[in-house]
Amino acid sequence: MPIDEASQRLADVRARIARSAKIAGRKPDSITLIAISKTQEAEAIAPLIAAGQRVFGENRVQEAEAKWPKLRETTPDIALHLVGQLQSNKAEDAVALFDAIHSVDRPSLVGALAKAMDKAGKRPACFLQVNIGDEEQKGGCPVLELPALLKEAQAADLPVQGLMCVPPLELEPAPYFALLAKIARDHGLEGLSMGMSGDFETAVTIGATHVRVGTALFGARA
Image 1 (tube, rainbow, N blue to C red):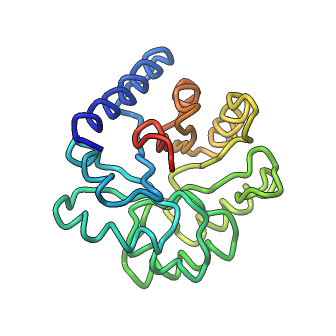
Image 2: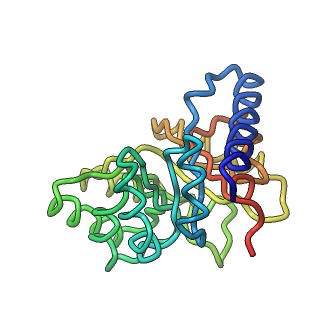
């Protein structure tokens, strides 16, 4: 993707975030845009970095390990967020590479991450992933089990910044975003990682602090 196209796409997404924030009476700079670069080659990511984007999201530890160390050599101020499912045996690698982990969804992972963070002396921000639509095929902690998971994460000294969700496909996302926002408020959590290319504007009006945008920035996946 040429740099001028990358700049245009980035400006468009930022303008849409700003517009939605204004509607909700929020400051646009209170929303972090995470560019979802999973499956994208380094050549496709570089123009967005050149256009000024600094926060990126990846789905898999191995894929991120393959491309980000080199990209970060030239741009060290990049923040990397893990937004995909994480296996407990990859906790050490994830802690080493990422600045935030959005998919903490079970006690065994809490334990693995706490151990990895203690060992590395580094504590990436954590979001607890909630299975907000109670979908069998999706990752995330069931809504009713969240209080116990949060208690465990806090006891293990994980820096829990907030909650994350992926609402059910094909359904209006607003009620699910609103439910996540309510659950976060009830537990005194400020971070809300919600909203993707098709619905990030809705998410921003409902309180998203982090939106995860891929297609609108990179174009449709092959």
